[in-house]
Length: 299
Image (cartoon, rainbow, N blue to C red; front, side):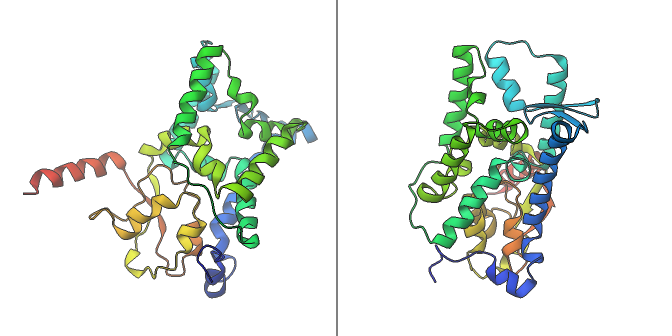
């Protein structure tokens, strides 16, 4: 079977058992659905553990949490943010500085459920081909979002942001927002593999920037055991992050996936029958310092 249509994880399920081959995927789904449930308990059942939405919330009337991506748009729009919002954003940034900015994308964002569903169906329908977009496109879109906020004096992007639209819609009702979410699903299914999250989403780009200094990483700690089955590349929404750590290319690169675009989804750990990958603690600043020292002593 062509690697393009190989179902990643099938061999792992046979050799390791279904649960072990999906344990991190299941953990993500439990986390994503639990986050949604906490927001739904109030409007649906009158149990207000969390008030608000992903953009801004208050937990147990004590803990404020603010999406720093939304706050930054607010500041670019020229609005003065309340101290509660600033405090909430700092808490969120501190958390993602530790665990990885794009952990938001894989473990919290509700759109991930949509795009993962499209990727799953794409494999099973054996849909070929995908246009090649530069993954830097999302960073240019991030700049555009901030430029629009600056030019219009409003957080205009949040009217269209699929993350905000879907999360608010699940809680308060979607209306026409379903068309936007359906469009993303069809785009990922029929046009571009991992198209939205992997190439276009400016919110993902923002969290990738936060993740540059994060400590929690995936490491190809046993990369010498790799048998080149390609399952990790097929299942990864950001496959470009794997090769440097797995193959040590360019020469001398360590086994830790240092690129901040990694979502820490854990699927490469799930599908690898050789147990090549694992989560590890990595301190980017210390690693950079060691590399500089090595270069100084290299003749």
